[in-house]
Image 1 (cartoon, rainbow, N blue to C red):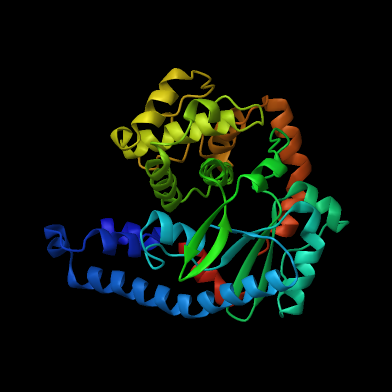
Image 2: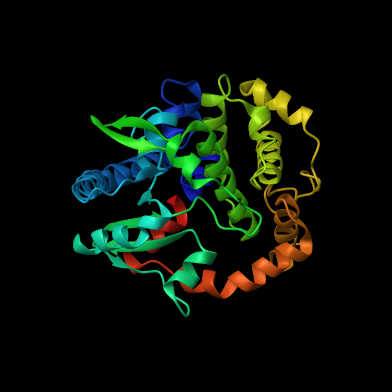
Length: 334
């Protein structure tokens, strides 16, 4: 059961590495071990394409004097899973300053990438309601971000985000990455969007716990949970829910203590469908998940509903199905 769940959730490589040298590995059936090894093989194949593509993109942006921050993918795998092959991923996520969006997009086009995301009415208007566009070239997909997340209640300080960015070396090359604080915020907001869309991924819960555990000792959780940028509600609700699901309070003692000191929870975090900890009742058209997410944001239900309805046509235009060769891979490993 565990192996099948991990295969469906893009956690096969994580499970395979976790089982190295453990007696539990012998409890798996041969076909289960084979499926886990197949996932590792597929990820190695992806890396043969994505690794050189990332280096080429870095060189392209550097030559064009275009700053970028590497998000998720190889950075998450390398830092928080201990190995560039420690976590499955299928594309490359880059963040650029919002004012440089057009320049970054043009650079991608010169490298043979084509924007797959649709536009409704005007590009600038569409960009107001979403945080990234998808680009594709051959077997390489790029998510080009200009914002960590879009919501009427969020007011992230972009200048601070870029001023506080860190660096991390992957395969001998240094990349700009988010600060630990913004890494937690980004992972939390990403999972909250997926909860709202009724598409939460178990892998993202593991991501958050890995990030939180790695940064717990030096993170000022009280400051993070007291910000005035619209992130407090999402952080309180999503982080607490992740800890409840994993029962990993002891791995993040400082975060656990900070969560217990902050009591702005507006919606019970345990009112979920029994066998799906991130699916909330009522299940009809995902209403329970939408209501949970609406109350998790730092706004009221009326404002959330207004934003959701107004932004929906633009989000639908942008989030088109990926090209055929990416669909199966996206379904399990995005």
